[in-house]
Length: 79
Image (tube, rainbow, N blue to C red):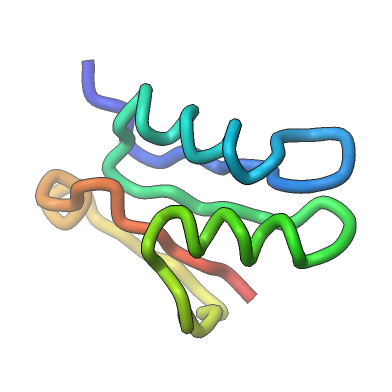
């Protein structure tokens, strides 16, 4: 079954960037929303592993089922 949106904790006492990347690669969600636990270094390393360098955080993420259906592992960085 398709996984729609997954929130991925990255950092202190949760997933390191490698484990977070492996999780996302394994479950293949439509959209990934990573968030930092502790410092931002692990989050930035995860974004780099996902090929998402230079991302700007967004204040809001709204997605409709039709939009989600065409996403393919899109990373969304919330502010």
